[in-house]
Length: 253
Ligand SMILES: [Zn+2]
Image (tube, rainbow, N blue to C red; front, side, top):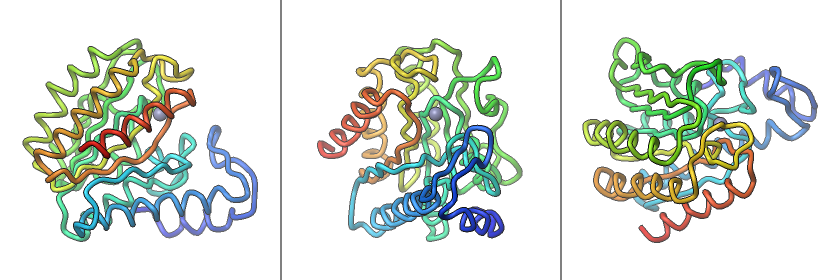
């Protein structure tokens, strides 16, 4: 997934403090944390694929979905969900990723845009130079991957009705068509109305409703096998309530 030269660069930063880009800082142990986060996601994904677990929640930091093959971006050093999805793909599994963080999952899209074996779906705020600027509806994949990338851009100020409509009319049908064996979720909680960066107004009930739909689709297509990885979220209350809602949906499922 990541270039060897980029991983060497990260390894050289162990013990150091600094910035990899304008907003991606690292402390002395950030690289270690990022590598452990990705390794934990791979281990979890493999246990699901082996049938040892049905569901799993990776409460990891730093987040990963902006990290591209050869560069850190947007607080992300290593793209944990993409590394886990690549491991599953390499083991022959048919994988879908749904990313509901308010920002486009540019790194995850880049990892799989030319690969028809992994479906990537991202719902995100788009327009007005909102970070990272990618994720238009016209980005649907490259080469053999055409049709296996679905971007659902949403206007600033979108809330629960807009998100649930997008889930029901775009995400659900795409998952049904693709019929994945395993569902991976990039769970960012920065579309919540309390988030200071996201500019969206999804309430707690909306977050719970989105999670309930994901659980239903995993039950339908993946024999209940799904995992979620924590991505962004800048209101700690919204992140913790969202993570608890995810855990509860998984325990109830
Ligand atoms: Zn985000």
